[in-house]
Length: 123
Image: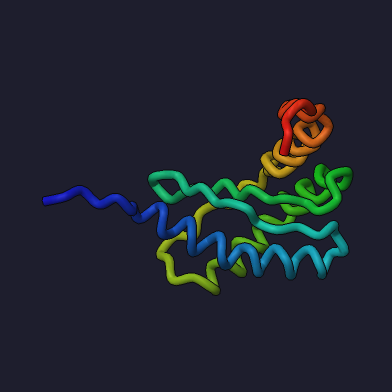
């Protein structure tokens, strides 16, 4: 029998990402935090813990926003438990997702490079 290529943790992660996106958006609006979105969720194999990666529109307010989300984690977890049909809802650990900032920095570096195609080409 062929092995499953899509594990239960992947399905749970996708479901949590969808639900947490809505819950985090509501929490951010309610508490006056910087605009935040959930970029990824990684669930441990035993489904006891979930790393929630968030991106913050205003990078200078990222640390403050993640700190607030960590403080709100029990409340968000409670709301999540009411929204999903899981026997055990994982403990939430919020982390700032630096991949967007890193990609933006690389894009700016590439944009600032001189044109490498050469100006001697006759087009």
